[in-house]
Length: 238
Length: 238
DNA sequence: GATACCATTTTGGGATACCAGATCGGTATC
DNA sequence: GATACCGATCTGGTATCCCAAAATGGTATC
Image (cartoon, rainbow over all chains, first blue to last red; front, side, top):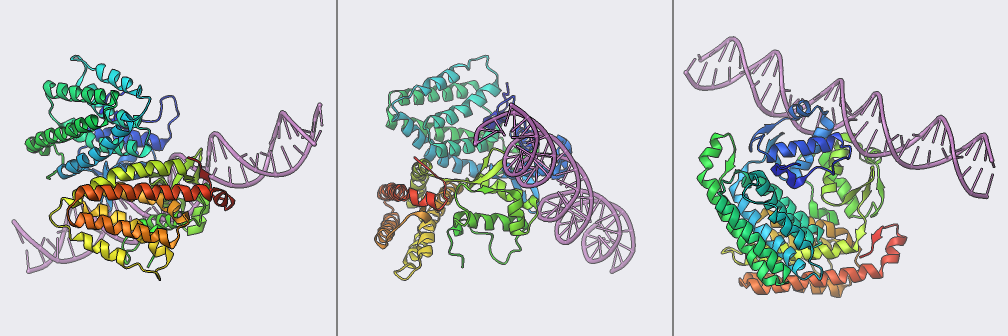
């Protein structure tokens, strides 16, 4: 199983014959989200072409897709891996709050909220022995799956896009076990509120969780900015 | 000046030399939004190629972009213009409410809200003699520009995407002068609330406006569904 | 040593050739 | 007349080639 951060946007279901384009797209996304290619790095179509053994046609298609995901950006005539942008992280938090709260309110109003239990089970699959990558993945998937329960494709897509763009930054965040546990508890509290149909409470808890998550993330990255720069990662200030 | 619905996603600023890809993308988008190509129609890369005098390379790039905008979709191996989907319109309204309300709350909390007056002037530029296309465009741009004032790129993009996907349906909606006037008045009322910094009132008015707009739109389209089908437009029921 | 200059290389944008699979017609068979 | 079959045609997917513009790097000049 793929435990890397890239699993947020997993490739098409296994067993399917992937086209070159899907191949390049998913592998390149994994490399970017997994920080194998650093934020701010230059990308050339020829390098990707030789790296993945595909011709430029699928490479260009993949680049266009990753551009709309915000993982890469045009740099004049060429391509650049999107830098870590602290100001952007703040804006994403505002956007997340809008769409995630709307989604959770919808879900709390559903008659059948049994989908919650699947998410609860997902949370419970993590314990002290679970590797850090898995914690990371579950933390992202929690929000995506919660949004999916709302049944609204647009809210889901919004949450998924936001989590994708947040993925690298969260990966860089230095989180101790206590912080992981706190987030885990907050996730469970949100689920509990949704389970009882208490939309207002769920919204409150989710808002606080997102704000807290943003604050911890920005603090961690700001403190570690020199270290990140030293690793060759472009970090844009807020 | 371009008064077509496609103006929602205008091409790069005039005077710039457009690449073939931008050329194909903007022209194809205009044809789709302007209903010159009907919802549900098949598209082949070869047809687009010959229609716009470009090779398949920029054509494919344009198709990939329009796919992420939701204006076209893959149909097995080929491409199809996205049908008008009534269920989707309801979901978009929910999404819109989430992001637009969030944006207007941010804007109402700003110190400098002078940008509002530019939008008010835009509304006031419409009168009884203004052609229907212009009313349509201003109606869409109102929401986009209002979101832009928030300064949040993600909320803006969400609103812009939603309005793009709503554009064709609104174009098909049969709106009498009274309905246009009502929407105009509601827009002004929202601006007035934002102007005084009354975020709660602005949010209330905006929510009601979006819900009312959705109801009128769905009613109109449902009533006219046979007519639309007769014109060869694929309309998916809610 | 700094700088202006020019040849070379590299880049993305575009056009085209080729392929495998799907589709569509027409025909032969029952 | 219905149906099974088969070849021509069309489709998107891919590889490759060409081009103009931009970046690069070395060199001559001051």
